[in-house]
Length: 98
View 1 (cartoon, rainbow, N blue to C red):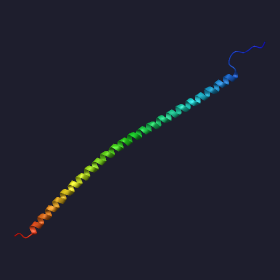
View 2: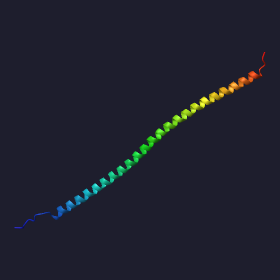
View 3: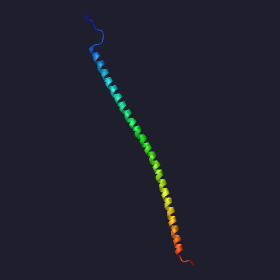
View 4: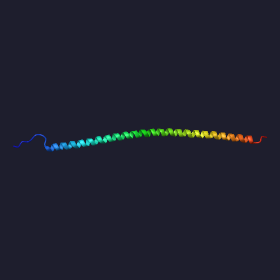
């Protein structure tokens, strides 16, 4: 009677090794992709922070522009009023008095 050998056969060992190599490759791919996603998300967060800061700076600059426009309009009006007053005063001086 032939004796059956107990243990792992060469076929089962090769299947186990191939399976372990495939699992290792898949794990390395997952780690690599996770690492790339992490670094890209850090870059995105930095860019989003810069965008938020630039938007805030834009709104501050818009307010400054509006203030300068208002101040310019008021200043122009004051100068215009002073010019008109000078013209009126000059014409009153030149006009003959009765």
